[in-house]
Image: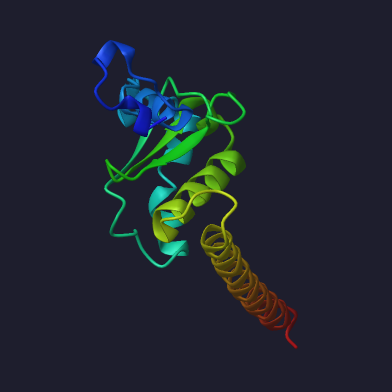
Length: 171
């Protein structure tokens, strides 16, 4: 098709599906939401972005911002509404506002899009899958460390309680 478009008027040019999808994406207009306009639960979840950056070793250099939008474009394969996407040209992650109502879904979507940003790879590629695996591994290590801290804190609290009780009982 590319070769058959030579010496043809712009109105007569054939467009491939890939070109159509790219043109549609380039011309899509989002309705962005200012974080100050979020509901309390949405704001609470949105404010976790910094902690997620800490989880993955810091904010990736290529990510300028995480934006929330009332509208999202359709997935080019399933035609379902996207819940999040990494826009490489703008160096931003865009997440559908509905996702912010569910903490687990928001965090999962944010990590998914961060994996695209860090790996530079699309879905279903080895590079993308490796990045997701690294994120999952980091989250498990942090959960393990937090559990150890909790157990240590709980043990010290119990020991302190026993010492206090023994002093009161005169033991």
